[in-house]
Image 1 (tube, helix red, strand yellow):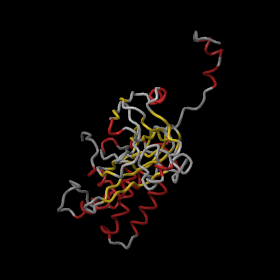
Image 2 (cartoon, one colour):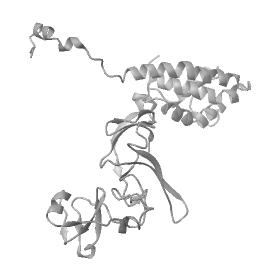
Image 3 (cartoon, one colour):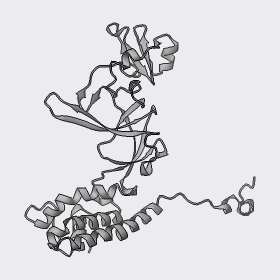
Image 4 (spheres, rainbow, N blue to C red):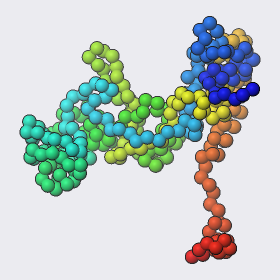
Length: 301
């Protein structure tokens, strides 16, 4: 039998085999009761397993974008805008303010900003406003302006998280595993706005004091062909525990047994294997040996 890339249906059949039930030909088959059970619980099982370990097959690294005056297409109240490179401040905007870092600056003359704020500041384009509270107090409830979160808030910058974000692993090279750094290095929030038609627009956001933010995170990767087999096995076992009672009708006995297997066998084995592939190589003292380097013609100093 020739190998073919793993599909969502294949992972569902792992679960059904764990239960001892008939496999399915297609997860999206609306005529199959077993396929229906799998569809109802599949992505919940995926998300639970994904958050239990920093899986190699789900890890992504991306730079984050600063949250501005618009969140998911909804315009928030106007506040002193964050300075942007190569921005033309016209006569109609003369005397308005911008923020840069944690300070507020007044535009002194009509000119085109360069790509370097410090040069513009030295050239007299900007003058620092030494009473920023006159502006931050007016917008104390609006914390989306980068570097101008207001004196009533402890973080200076807000970033939007990717739509596939599940779990933070690193921020700017600092480990955030097991919630390390929460409150000191960063905090996660939901930025939510009520639209004029009463619908809700929201985005997951990260707040910190860093002017740039690059994160490493666990993502909701929906392509099963690149999932690690042990990760798929974990999903299969947990999914099986979620649908076993409906299929077997045994009062939860199979569900309990499969959940125990997931917690004590399937998940621990997968974690050890996947975690071992992430470990840094141990220090090898022989590589620092002058004797061995000289033997192979290498430098000894």
